[in-house]
Length: 251
Image (cartoon, rainbow, N blue to C red; front, side, top):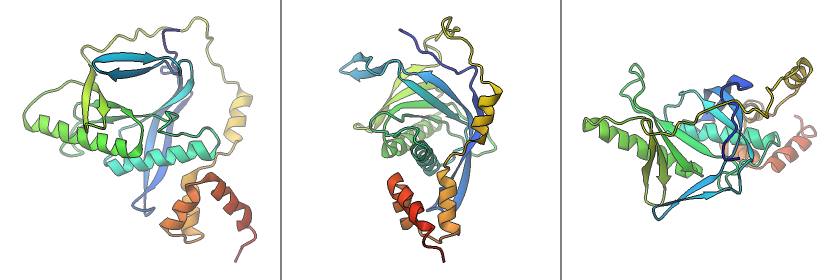
């Protein structure tokens, strides 16, 4: 098509939240979801040898973009949130959510401030991240980069950066000042999405598998340690097998 369709301005999912555990399942954290809106994919841009290449093989693929509120304070919180989100997608048979295969992609936004009482600093988005380890390194690198800029008294604009994990650095893709005008406009061949009352009732009555609740049950009801929990939640087939036999193993 040469352009992307997005539900950005009229999302059907807003004001949600995801609960997850930290510190080997000893501490709970809640991250609020601003919205989850539908989009379709466009093309993959590859930067190589000073050239920008476009791969249109994934153009038109449907996707859901989930936008969180700025509730993260540590890298661990980001990673554990993403692992819980990945489990939700897998446990409910939505998809495989394989980062390395591009089925789940992450853009991280980082800003630095001296204390939570101060306003957020200038936000920088880092793209091209396809593993949990890479996400951790990207966040830590960008935090240090921004701290050095502030320490030197430099001012920088809101920007989007790409990640070169091999070199352990990021590079400028576009800044707020020179970013392209996306020129949003209604798609004339796509009518407004109307969700009828019956569909809403069916969705509200349907049950989703929430991994966080399963982990809580393992901790509180069965007294499992982190190794047992990790073994069970890392493989959906193993987890299903456990629940298929647990009713025969009551105390």
